[in-house]
Image 1 (cartoon, rainbow, N blue to C red):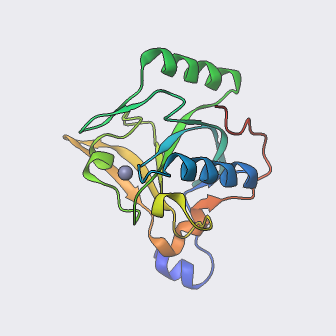
Image 2 (image 1 turned 45 degrees about the horizontal axis):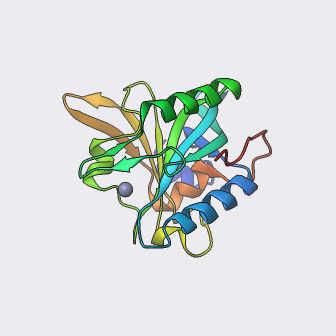
Image 3 (image 1 turned 135 degrees about the vertical axis):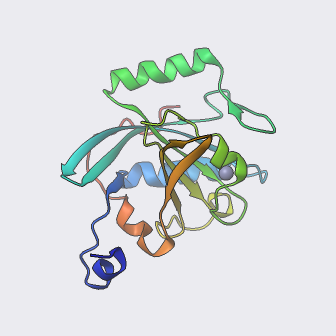
Length: 189
Ligand SMILES: [Zn+2]
């Protein structure tokens, strides 16, 4: 059945759901709002655990967040680079939490369209990573909203182009669960 019809009938089943505790969701917004106070984009990496919850459905439980600032990231004209020692620390934390790098979240000045840089330089470019990328509009100002949050998922690479799943605005709320009750280490730094 077509997805639009399923939605009409109220039976749309998202293939993946990104689950945040409400505390993490709120604190990540607050932190990124502060980091974007001088109208600069800010963001960070998401640690998480993926679990199949139905044959065609995966839940991604966010178990921690590291800001780019804490990771000492430097932005160049084309991408973002994180010093190897900071990345080692990040992966150690992943191991401790039995988690992995599952996604990233960053702010944009206005809307949530991915920029060319976002599209061409995913934070975890391995084609099997199924990395999720979230974008918060207006430098994370205003009330956090699932429908205003840009949701993208890397779906591999064909020739030299990264393939991605872009979630349309009206169904973003099905892909973001912000009142999950799983264990999370929260904002780690
Ligand atoms: Zn961007």
